[in-house]
Amino acid sequence: RWIWSNDPKVIGTGVVDTTASLVYAAGATLHSGIRIKNTSSAGTLFVGFTGGTDYMAENTTHVGGSGGYALGQDEELFIEMRNAKHCTVKGSAASITYTFLAH
Image (cartoon, rainbow, N blue to C red; front, side):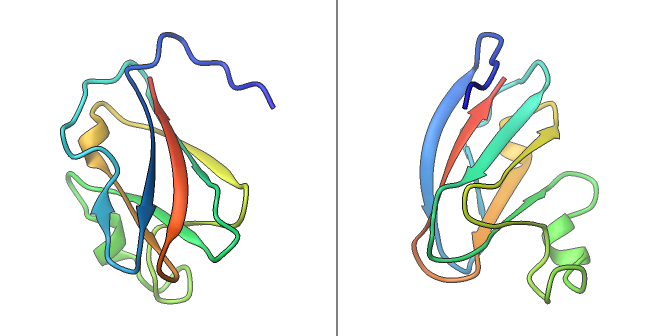
């Protein structure tokens, strides 16, 4: 599958467990946002954002008590945001892998 990326600022991969963490803690000012894909077959990746309202903490009832947007295996999501350090992820189990493209 081809993903259009207009001069990406950051491209990377990560592994997360059941604790929420920042996708790119160093931060990067973005033109449009960040695309995240769950590359794990082991469980669900929950994607949220910080700044203003912490989506992970405030909306835990929407996806089975885990918070964030739920992505199954090979599902992806684009979130418009100004800085990469505002995107958070956590998994439904240990060792949930993901890729991201921030542009």
